[in-house]
Length: 106
Image 1: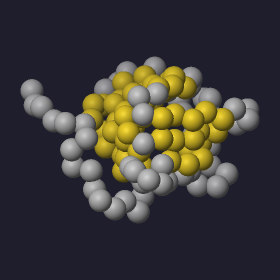
Image 2: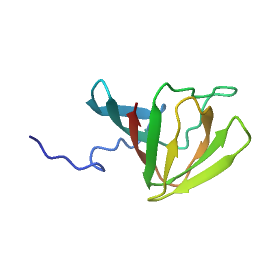
Image 3: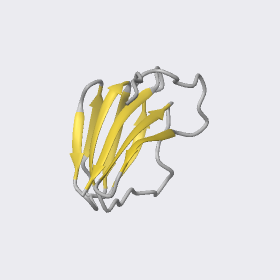
């Protein structure tokens, strides 16, 4: 057993998005993701085999889906993305780091 704070140890500068796997099993993966004005590469789409629960704990993010849907997530908003629902991160906050909790499950 160990205790940590989800908002501790946030780097001041990030050239790339930081993904930290907190829990990993055959049926679930939990990640802490830290974005600093990051976005997906042009023409890149996530096409994941797992469902994804994603929550923004700090900052904000704009997600775009292949079907044209745009969704903005701000602090404490969450979204459930079904497996193989193609999406991308259009933009994350440029005024503060965006801190995500992502849970991937079958």
